[in-house]
Length: 103
Image 1 (spheres, rainbow, N blue to C red):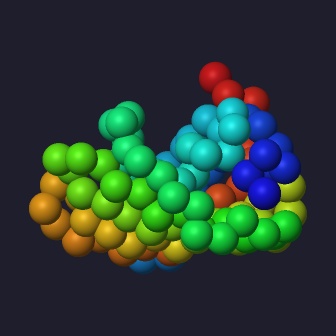
Image 2: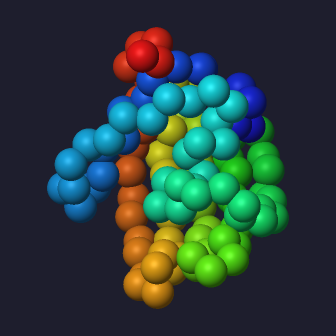
Image 3: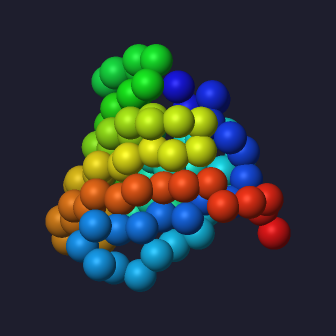
């Protein structure tokens, strides 16, 4: 499902009112580990449907997470993620839209 997303710059708007964030999407997988930016994480695909994917991942020494991405269109997705980063829990819901080309 992630491969079918439009490539380019996407803006994430968090439902809790946190500041919006921009992400350059090249493969779609950039939307999976939004709180764990370091590499070296192991991923396990729990569900990979036509319009939805759920991925669980573990980052040795930095925590873990589980992210669900639901596609509403090639340039609009809903993201729900939760886990532990740096010893602290996190949870967020966000909407991501393609806004243009990556800079």
